[in-house]
Length: 150
Image 1: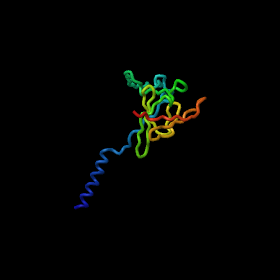
Image 2: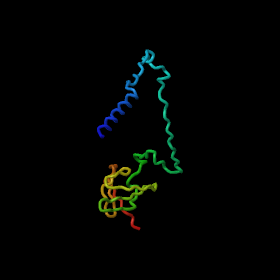
Image 3: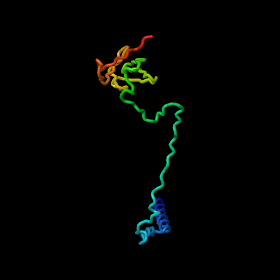
Image 4: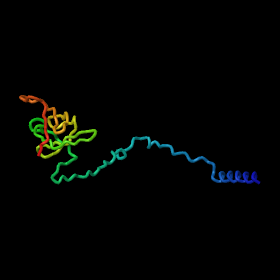
């Protein structure tokens, strides 16, 4: 009985395939002589430009954080001697110095960071030491800032 059922399924499959047709699909059309000619100018038009709307930042009297910060060099720029040490923060792994510029902007620095004309060398318990560019008439190229005790 099982052999008979298998044979019926094979015959049914063959009949179904024969009914579908066993002719191959049609070949794609061959390009004509006109298609081998160069494309017209209209077909070669450059792709349309994509215009992306960039949102505008409203400063509301503040500095735009997306603009490059300009650091002035020379006599008009920030100098370490003009800054004030406002705090020292310590953890198990790092010490940070809190320094305030004359314009009220605060900086958080670690040893090796630069500020104005100097580079922070070390952070002590109540002071920081900067290496600054040597100036004529200056006895040392180090500036020490100490915490103000109130």
